[in-house]
Amino acid sequence: MSPNRALKTSRKGVGIFTMKIRGIPSHAGVDHEKGRSAVEELARQITYLHSLTDYDIGTTVNVGFVKGGTISNVVAAEAEAEIDLRVVTQEEVNRMLPILLNLKSRSEGTIVEVTGGMNRPPLERTEKVQRLYGIAKELAKSQIGFDLPQASTGGGSDGNFTAPLAPTLDGLGAVGDGAHAVHEHLLISEMPVRSALVALLIEQLANETV
Image (tube, rainbow, N blue to C red; front, side, top):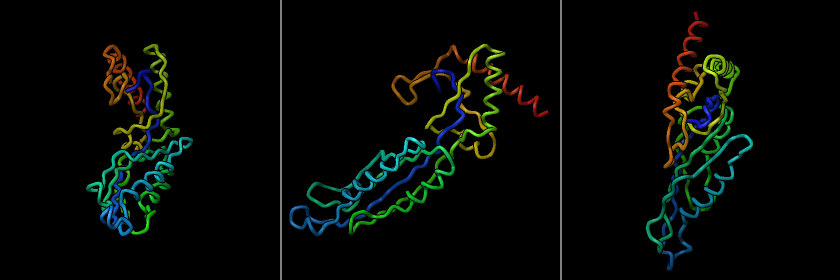
């Protein structure tokens, strides 16, 4: 859903991971030195994980949900976090997966375990994808009369699943704005235009196949 009619010719791959940490509980006042805080280890891991974000290459790592401990006067025995990974290319998937799945403890006496993997592969902007976009752009201009931009996005879709199997052109649906926000909406006036573009694109590609 794009406010400027843009088609998605690139989508980031999505990874979802769970990190569980085990520490050693102890009384926070009487035996503080005997404990090993899973919450402290979690804090150190979060700092490291967020440092892996690299906007220049489009890789982001986000710890979006955390929980841990039982009560304030006990050194935390357990902690947990959910990690979101976004990458542009399969090459970057191959680099990041071993890093996340082999995280080591940063605090003596704690144990770190990470499970999960890629939820969606990247939809990469290949030459074949660009060719499909070129066809759609020309049809939009010559047959309907509007400019059709392209865009990349960090959000995933079902197009991520088809991308490794066949050239995929995504974002042909509704035009709107505010995904997942309170002001999320689509423009009804754009639906006939979008439908016409899809019909023309199907007809063009069917004729080329024949």
